[in-house]
Image (cartoon, rainbow over all chains, first blue to last red; front, top):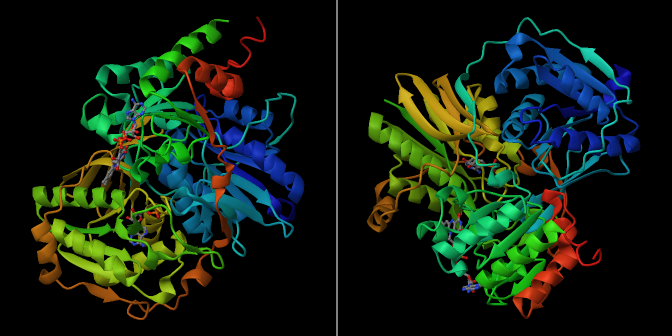
Length: 333
Length: 274
Ligand SMILES: Cc1cc2nc3c(=O)[nH]c(=O)nc-3n(C[C@H](O)[C@H](O)[C@H](O)COP(=O)(O)OP(=O)(O)OC[C@H]3O[C@@H](n4cnc5c(N)ncnc54)[C@H](O)[C@@H]3O)c2cc1C
Ligand SMILES: Nc1ncnc2c1ncn2[C@@H]1O[C@H](COP(=O)(O)O)[C@@H](O)[C@H]1O
């Protein structure tokens, strides 16, 4: 018991394993933190037929993997997983629990934190250990224009969620050794009150804009439906997705699905292109997690230009065409 | 009769806000407030259920006295009763404390509720934690990020998109949902309704003593803000202008590696290799 008191746990969120590598990214960051605290990095995973994931977690840096495997856990279940994790955390007393901010994780973590009577910081962009050995969680605050450093000084475990793509996974190494701790399914697992009647993988067009690494966003400045369509060519070349502002959706230049903003989707691409967008807060509130922002606007004083890393003063449509042409050349080379 | 509770938060309308660097909390009194968009959608979902099945909607908010405004707005749109939780001792509450206080107020004022509806997240703190935590506080089943609801007898059927899965879920009531902004487009607020809302109905105002709570928002919150700072300085803010072709070349020469990340292609390399 004593030895495990300092462990750092990562929730094994393996659904969409190939798209969402957040568990592996967290194992990597947990490894950095563990060096400072002298703790072990543990993955905790529930489900059925988990061998493959257990191997992956060890190959990606987990020193220990706690596994509860049972045919009744085949389907992802919020209530079951929260209940099991609470049970394990109360028994093994980890110092830190990290959860990927997938849709599942973003519901799982707050419920777990509540049951454990501890704090939780959402969507951390940085995690570190201070001199007192406390986890310092950096997260966007107050509409995302500010960053806050947050700690949970007294209660344990310390808990944080982290969006996919925030940290880098370490390359897998199947030579790595780890301890696998198999725990039988507790007999008193309560009956689920929330019943999953039906589920299906979304028949998605490639990927969802929320998960896209590159988003090409167009606003009214694109000038028309046909011109707006060019953005799809650009997005395709970059392996990305297209987003739109509200006037674009209202004018029916594209699908409401693609609306980016308070009334639409929040996105967090590594690279965001913004063509002919003025930068109203209802729109920019949803793009603040974007990495590199490249804005194109004929008005150098547009708010969007101030929010950009690269502010290009040009006609949106002409620049889009020029970029497509140049990209085609470079991709082929 | 279907008894619904909608948790509504007032959020600042603008993004440039004053905050107290000492406590790290927001000086909310300086910011003009509006109803948090997701809460607005949750209210709309409740109104649609009410139209179909009849019912009674209680809107509840915790915040400074001026948060009364969003309750008036809720009344104008169709809520039946409003509760304002306001107390200096509640200020600075994190999601853990907020959900605790909301739960105690719900238990006191409407213990026989059928459905609690929350927004999926707020535009200011954006934690998406209060709804799920309230589920645990009230010890009822719940589902987050619900896009669509339907009531049959005592069973609530829900649809949501969870990661890459379209899920259909069911639970017996009472239960809690947090509603996304994708489906329940809020109705227009009639100006006349807003007028009436000021005359029509009183707002029940409760403080910590009314709820028999011995609390201190900041002290009792498990999390503590160490410091708040502006990351904006990180923006490189390079300006480029001139002929489109030249800009595009410059852009890719400078950022080609990052831009090509998704297709695993260093778009910078071109030119040097030739
Ligand atoms: C409650 C509420 C919710 C909202 N929710 C959302 C939301 O979710 N998402 C959203 O996007 N909006 C939302 N809005 C609307 C938002 O306030 C703005 O009106 C909207 O984002 C503006 O879109 P835009 O930038 O495309 O258009 P505009 O503001 O009209 O800006 C067009 C820009 O293009 C530039 N431009 C024009 N011609 C060219 C050219 N040839 N080349 C280059 N640049 C050019 C102009 O200089 C200007 O900066 C909401 C509003 C409200 C009140
Ligand atoms: N102070 C509050 N008063 C009432 N409801 C709240 C409050 N804070 C959060 N909520 C509810 O919880 C949801 C999610 O908020 P958050 O966890 O802050 O993102 C909101 O959409 C509201 O429904």
